[in-house]
Length: 526
Image (cartoon, rainbow, N blue to C red; front, side, top):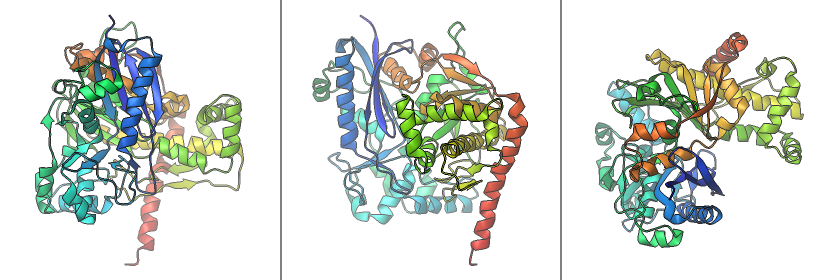
């Protein structure tokens, strides 16, 4: 009987489930849209919607595949860095502004005042870091300050990933990757927030450990999967994607040792982006999150990233007058809008590089603030080079401009890491935008680094497969798991002839930020 692993990946717009083997091959997969509310500055999901989607998708996956439920040796899952507040009977507390939502999405920025409150204390005590509102501890303080009546109802603060593990196993667990648990006790004392510690519950487990007695009876009956099937402790999606690709190798190369990760930069690109670097020593860097211990032995990670990537591309496209025209033409050709625009840009460029089409169109991509390295969520987006042009060609140029701005934002983050002593020789991408060849090519051109295209296009699904295999003891440790599933198809290299062009684009990118700060200073009343 084959050893089959069930992987669950909960993203921002959809939930995916897959059956994989221990060599990292996706054997079957199903996708289900999930509801997401995104009013300005906020992001919410419904836990009931996510759970029902998870159950339905797994049932469809198994029924449509050629594999029997008894073949499933382990279950693993990853989710976005989202969170819930639960009552004493483990019922999610609905958001005060939307009774349909009870999961605070990773991009929810309503706790900006509380993050600034923490940041002010950090500066007064001699620290040089800032806290951003995507931090769960800031959201918890927001609930206490803005809605004390809901805070009184709150018994448990929990990551979405840990919540779903509880739903599968009836066991409350957390790991070193559980973001709700990341806080400094002196900060809590400074804002009179020690009572938050009473609201954390569960057993600490390593990432990928077997949870309790495995799949619970009720959910096993619903899913028609054997009771007690090992369920792994959860992982956040970006870190899971990192581990699935960071030691990748070509089909005929020997397995890479863990220290290969020291020269590689993980590039998780989807609705948002994160870039995860690895070091032997814990490095504290302003403008980065970390350091945190790695699951790889004796290594540490620092993370940088951009809050809006895929979501920014969607926004720019949807708000251009030519969007409907281009979308209809793309559908007629059986293409996605981005694949269609990639073809259009190739036609427009002719013999010249596509990148050079935007000599005079520039963007600062801070439409949702800046996560890192500026750590300032009040920053806004800027676009220079607008014309009275409603054409499809103009839409394509704005799409290209957004890709270039995100690539330059990646370069800014990478230079922050390099200035702290990191050295990189390869990008290892994963996520939805990693399937876009233009997006990857311009990241290589802007950063000057080659990129390894993963053999498995849906590399994020390998995250759950690895944790499932660890829980089922099919992998001896994390190094074994990563080496077993992580392979790349090919390497793409930057175009050296674009180095000077992107150097000038990067100068404009940095100058646009300085211009924004100058405008703010001019407009200040005092």
